[in-house]
Amino acid sequence: MSVRRIGGLLFVLVLVLGVAGVARAEPTLRAAAGDERLIYSWRIEGIKGLILRLVAPGRGEGSLTTILNRDGEFETELHMSAEHRRKGDFWRYGSSVDPVAQRSLRAWSKQKIGDDERVREADLRGEDVIDLASGILLVRRDPPRVPRRMRIWSSGRLYPVVIEPRGESRAEFRGRPARVQIYAITGYRVPGESEWKGGIELYLADDASATPVEMAVLNKGVRARLRLDEEASQFGLPELRRAAAVR
Image 1 (spheres, rainbow, N blue to C red):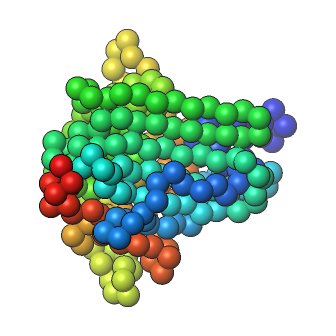
Image 2: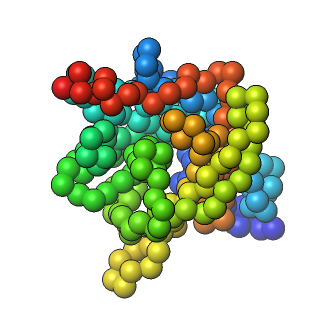
């Protein structure tokens, strides 16, 4: 494979995860008692992933944190870091969500790779829009039975997406076999609009919080699979009655 081809794959990996040499960085959100912080290990999969692992980090750690803020809103953030550290580099997506209306209110993303730092933020009030983090939360709280069309805020732009159930599987969760429901968020073609090249698959346990025991983040043939580290995780989405009390 040519150097140019490998370089192109590395660029895709940076766009998807920001992990080509990305180091461990602390998440923005801090989970308190009654909040949730799920810890994951991740690994690049697929044919392109095999190539990428020859020249870039192919695995690392991640976290998905959901807290209740002082305004009675859920804040959720997906954060990832690679096994090989380079001080100062990081990548994350986050959003605030109205827990009653189940609507995204605000979204942000921040990525720093070497000297390149990208910060984006958007007010999504009044829009039928998700981002990567709020999409995970809203599927967990209101899993669709039939395909649901929305828009996703990604890299500062809006794209049409469909959220749909993908069947059932089995997994080990909390020391026993458990049913896992599979959901996917993918882009689709709309005339005159750009198509989202990303995607995410969620493998949700059959428990009260619909805990993601696995997730897969995809873009242009590059797949990063995240597997839950139960021993390191703090389980349980914040309860609605806490939100009502704060409000």
